[in-house]
Image (cartoon, rainbow, N blue to C red; front, side, top):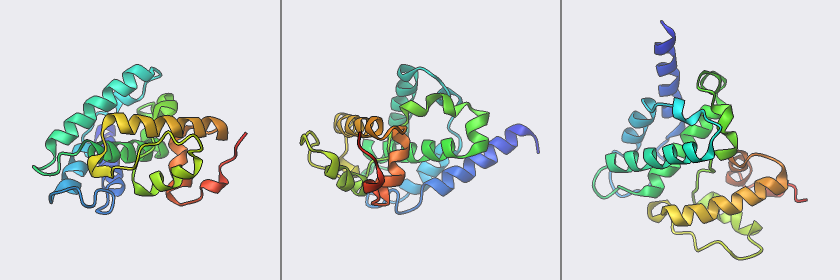
Length: 182
């Protein structure tokens, strides 16, 4: 097996492992999980290994729209596409082989937290300024609402002295109390 085949095999494994039926539950049509896994298994990871936030975000936005368009009628939700990509990118970053192969560590400061009701519920505990809008659900999440949530998450990450991508580990498992405040 050559290195390209190994890359593809490991990436396919991470895509399948990242997107479980519960990851994209209730999005409005059948087949969303299979489509997301297939898309992510072949996604070019090289453009995510950058030290430019603008380049990273532009590529993330482009891929979100691309995956959204691939979803079946009735399930073309921006929030579901963004969540799938964010879960996958986080897991690629956590995968030593893919992280090194595609220099994903260069963009660690730009990764987003995959948003869902668990994270949103836990995040409310940190929203002392009441800036978060009501959680619309993954199915109805849009880019603007996501940006507000990611901004609050970014502030918590700074206060906790960790990269934002790692907050999911604490919030999703309802261990937000472990985050330190300065």
